[in-house]
Image: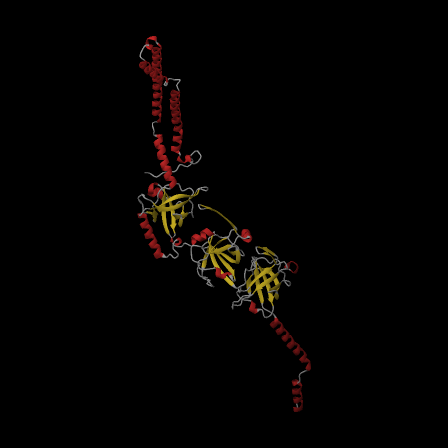
Length: 548
């Protein structure tokens, strides 16, 4: 092959046809379009919810502050069919909205404690609300909330943690009240199966967070509160919302200092009490325990009853009765009823610690030696409620026992009613022991003797009349006649027809009838002394008495 032909073939292979430019350009345009499409698409997220009611692929939008930020692309069941899986495509530049704190929930018509919401979705359909978070950790899978959150994570206010042993007392959305005014909401709750307590999270909105101090107590607001105690009865009405759904209210007891605002101290955990009285008692964290051995009946004495000293409350009844099963084993104090009480020095002293508590214990022990005793008294005559009263007595009984089940014993005296009952019983026993029958027999004999004497006097008077009427007697001196007539008048006054005789006989018979009428009354009062005050009736529950 010649050199000229070889050169021509090389030129022919180097030549590229312009036709190949068209697919190349198309490929470049397609790649650019693919890149533009992929770069302009937002991230894809997965939403998990129990029920996909109202969610439609291609129609249900995702909104944040009423701005469209995404769209649902598919709705399907999970592999185990336990929940619904929703795929959604977000708009570009929405990556900053998706993190661990982001929340999703469905906006649809709702009727709740706060009123009616979501009515605009009746015609437009339900949509998914997005609440942005502030965490730095990104996330693309979320569990949707069943209910809208009470407050956004960036809401200005205070979040508190409460614990309670009463599960189901509150629900999410219940109001938090202060003096009847709504200042927050219950934000979250969780039941701990191991500790068997409920953990609540409360949100106090601004500017009410300063109302919560270190000495604040929280209790349930039931709407209607009726309390009947030894001090009387009280009726309280809350707001209409708390009347329907309940809620939480808080405050500082009057007997303790207000305390300092807690600020943003999220480490504090408060206890949730059942009512205001329990919250008040819960503020007295330092107390002394004593057992009072009651010789009277404890019917009418209940837990929470006051322990008073001359009308001033110094403690609370804790348990009625207390470990009564140990009475038969120990035979303590003749089977008296043990009652556990608490002496709370914080009612009398603003600040109490362990050291001052020991001083109070030593002081009370000294008072025992000076005659300090406890007794039951009636606090409410209509309800029969009792309370424990402490006071000094002139002749105190001996403190025979110092401890019961490891708890110091507070020496006691019989109550005032029991003392009156004992005195009335002793008096009636003496009346019952009087020789009424023999006295009545002697009265009958006296009446018979008196009647016989009067008959003899009547016969004597008749004889004197005959003597005076005799003609021979008329000749006697006038002095003798006047003497005889005086004797006649005197004897006539004792005749059966004379007024003096009738009065004496009537008096003796009335006395006899009175003595016979007193016998059943004395017997009844001796068996049941309180029949002087209350109606008679069969004694259903005889009261055990201590052995003397």
